[in-house]
Image 1 (spheres, rainbow, N blue to C red):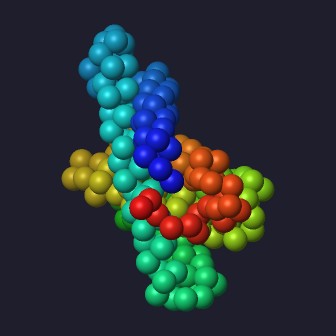
Image 2 (cartoon, rainbow, N blue to C red):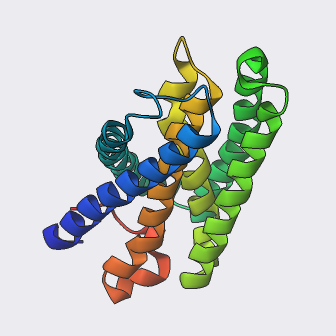
Length: 209
């Protein structure tokens, strides 16, 4: 990984975040009456604000992504055996699914009686799809790390909207969807921009020097 490749990943991730946020926000503006920035009539202002927020979400996602690569490198040096680290990631991912459901259930008066199981399940299914695509493009060893990043990483990055005093389903979805898209983009692009020698196990490579 060199500066040119990192620079491309950084700006392209911000662009993906801006696009995903604008699309998610626009859909929510038209379908969810409780979601608004400056009202449905302020189309230009809303679009500009969503694009700006999206670039920040993209940058935030990349911070989390490189934090995971660093954690992955440190963990592999500590555990010495890749299967031990993968087992811990798999257990943590399963725990995160249950924890996400518990958090939403504990606030079901805000999120509704369906959201507490529907949203964690949808995130798990989408994470599995991304992980399978990653495996098809690289190898089977990428399955668990990709699941961990897509579920646990996305959940951690979405936590500010979940822990806010005036949180609601619209705020969580508005932050969750772009973060998931940005994380998926980065994990699926990583092996493409690394050197061919490292592409077969991209997620288990060393972080940026």
